[in-house]
Image (cartoon, rainbow, N blue to C red; front, side, top):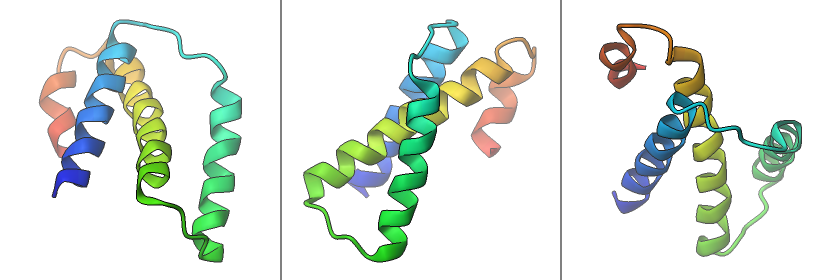
Length: 84
């Protein structure tokens, strides 16, 4: 349960950065990182819990930023995000 809360809280933080139009650098690097992380999961690589949570939190910040930056102009943004 705590890991789910941590992901959602980190994603909300990223969303706030996106709404505030805060630029996140190295977006293509993070995109490539997500692909490598997906391949590692598919290959069954086991990481220590702390390392896995750090990697997922990094993904959550960028995922939340994407939601925040794409919806910042919409007047109904906050009403639609809880269901996405």
